[in-house]
Figure (cartoon, helix red, strand yellow):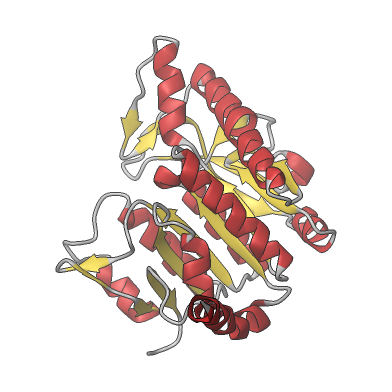
Length: 287
């Protein structure tokens, strides 16, 4: 009878040193992958975020929503066009993108966190000049329309919200100095905000367990090893931009970047509060 209760106590004790270490520290979680479409996983994620806040951390959520944007673009009879992996965004596509990201997904995440006892607040780059963007072109210098990258940030609103007990939820929509709305890559937004805040941890939720080489999970990488992996044939597809963002964040004073599988129940808690974690952690220091 008491054995199960003792095991639960041991789990809590395993988490204790991490709770102490991360108390009052900000962490960025890039919310993405299958967790965004699975009701059960969404609930687990919201529970994790609320627990993080109640044990003294300051979680900040960044999200995109590429699959949902494509679905709504198709609903109005348009075809999604991609150039070098980036969505070409005309004015109509931008209108749909903002509707989906800031209107639908953001409000859904905010409501879900609040339903589990958190105090979440929805934001985009337009709010309090959180981030100002500039138009960007593809790697082959092709026009991408209303696609941007962050030029400058003002994270004061995030510090205020965190200190007052709120959980910021940020959609990857920005604005340039001409007042145009721009579509931004959520991985890059998460990295830029993490850099601006000098956060302890940046977590990327994906549909894979982390970085694999020769079908084997690599639990830890230092900065040198991560740079070398960019040329490895096993690093491909969506992992390339995540690894590049991770390296950029580590080079700019983010202590640790984690790439984890969001389809695992309570993946955020398992990565942060257990001795071995569940994904790949990248840090500057040598092993």
